[in-house]
Length: 181
Image (cartoon, rainbow, N blue to C red):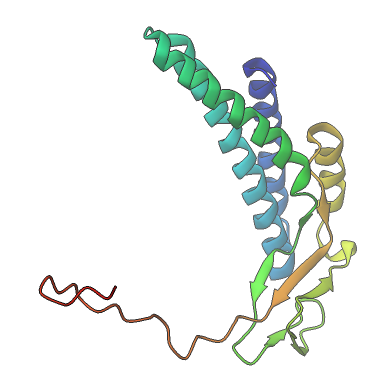
């Protein structure tokens, strides 16, 4: 992806961000507002990554030192490869996000409001599209134009209990101590 393609994609992402933000004002529930916020966060992260690529390409173009320029171009190519790889490997995103349950694994189901329990395996909660206040049609357009996909679910996971021994104590160095070997 070159800088002009990245710039066009940034403009598309900004337009979709504005559309999702405007649609959020008509939301009737906390669940719908939270899903809108999650979509905005994903779009912002992609826009930031693309802006960094453009900045790095401009910096490499301005560099006059040939060795530094080669280093910047190498770094740019690695970042472009990582962006291409991450664009598809990390998808689809859970529209409801990832949430920690309480220490005992309990959480409230965002759809029913009933208490639920998270086990050692994360719990997926399906989110009904009809309760998202028009967001599914926007997500279809985002998937078509920007190749960013979302699943209609939220993930709840149980936090790991704290270790009984949080860290191993390291004895201070004694220069007069006997060498152990």
